[in-house]
Length: 153
Image (cartoon, rainbow, N blue to C red; front, side):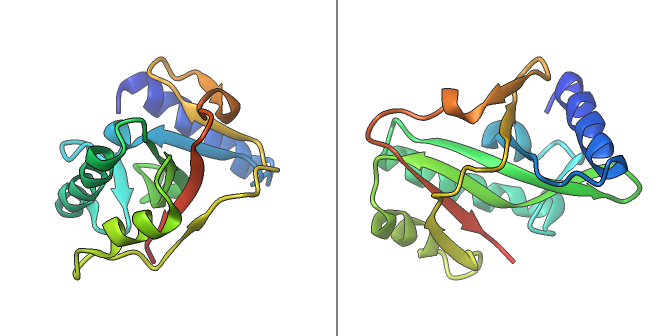
């Protein structure tokens, strides 16, 4: 994740916290968020040592659906605003829910707590782009794709 993205998400999360407004959702491209060299991001309480396994799962999915787009949904700040945390992947894919579950449940050591289809987009949701800009999720989907969540507890 680059410095523009970091500055943007810190500002957004702090603003939401100060105003007690927790209705916005913020996503990052999985490549930006799961960068193993970036200790600013924590996924599923695994920190740096756990990111490689999740990247491998995502690459397995992308190998089966070259049109898939995978994002990480940020849910907060930790360690006195030094780490942003997440535990959910958001997946845009032409694969069925059964196929998604098969891919993500294959490894016996990091399988998710829940996988399902995302149907509620009533909350404002934005991807943080390379320049720190907010991109509406309506610009991310393609015809024929379903949206799934994959959550680790």
